[in-house]
Length: 485
Length: 102
Image (cartoon, rainbow over all chains, first blue to last red; front, side):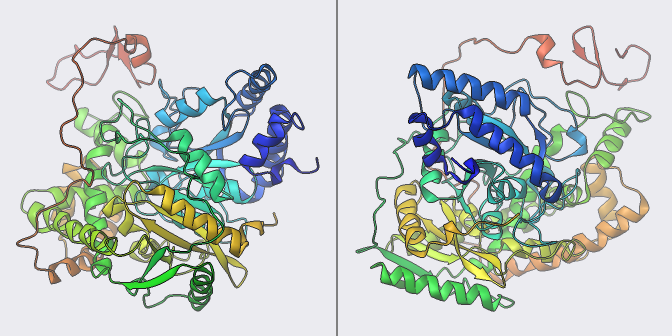
């Protein structure tokens, strides 16, 4: 076989099971690819070469013996460096955690390990997943494989670029306000934020605990189904993980969308929206109709308030979650004159500018005298945003929208204006506020850069969501277009 | 909404974030600007709307209170910047010399 990195996870499984390739061969193909393209892309913070090759050899033994061979046995994956791993550092791309090695695996990591998946390495991210471009990494930015000097999106930009540049078959990221779907759109691949509670968050370094969710980046929707069923399910280590059965997530795959009602929300069109994105959306809507779907206009009237709601709720939760980084139990410590001074120095020098900005914003929103005006107000608006979706889903099976108002922007073009950066997530945030699943799929190009389109579905109805996304993807065919790196 | 320099210093103290004058000034300007955008929420009358803190239909999640294996002291301390005699070591909070470090 020629270039093994062209195989999807499903194709890799078939080739491994047919003994056409070994996991060691497949893993070496990815390690070679990583060597070749990392100087240009910088998807990874840590490549786990020795561990990956040992896991691959073990997987080959398992496959040869026919011993409990699963979806991802011997398949090389990449992990966002915000997921705890016992055999590689977990830094959240922050100086405060440089060199930290977790004493436990995240539940998703443990599940993949049990399947016999191969861990290629830990991928770059905005520090503590706070950002939309991966430029907030303390260890340097990741570049978009599609365009010179373009950001890959963020925060899971390393995981997105790794799959787009074929430095991994599948990767995992986390999505608090769009951090999987937005970079998937920018990098021309598939990215899924599952329903809140679908996947255990144990061992995911927490950013905003009521919004965070782990999910996959893949080249096809079929691979998304494979990864989702590998990591989903209730976990006693996360009391917010839902006691709901895990299906195959492919049971609604079909070649048409007859009888499916898809909502189109007029609020998902904003000033400053790129014409190329709009054109791609119009073509995609036509494609959905050609597949037999009925397009229905719906209204999500509180969409315009989602960004402001998010920038209270998420920083408030973050300010509490990141209190743990105090230089006492783990992480770097910078000694001061007394304990308080040690905290001030450790945190002041350990965190980067965006993380400090969000901790400040959240602390302010929770502080005495401002709690009702900001934090409680945002929680009330969150109710309205959720009700918008509840009402819309009374009449439609799914909702379609652009993933972002623009394609990947230039490096450095938004770093001086925090709010301009926040606007990159204006279309992805509402799904986190409502807890519903959302998937971004490739929907064409604008000036040579990928355009992402997302679908939303009811909570825990990922099967419908993936069914629709799969039918569109197969008809549109953009998944066949690969970045040339 | 604009924040005063004193507001920013107060919040930085609450958050235990040490910042120099230039950083505080930058923070004052950026936070004021972000809060200005957030003020859009005041357009909405939410007096009769209940708050949403989380979106899942679970309330209390219980488990039996049984001892289970957990980390050894050594493992729990493996990432500590300083430890002493099996404990996390920090500088003295109340004065005196008893808070040693390893």
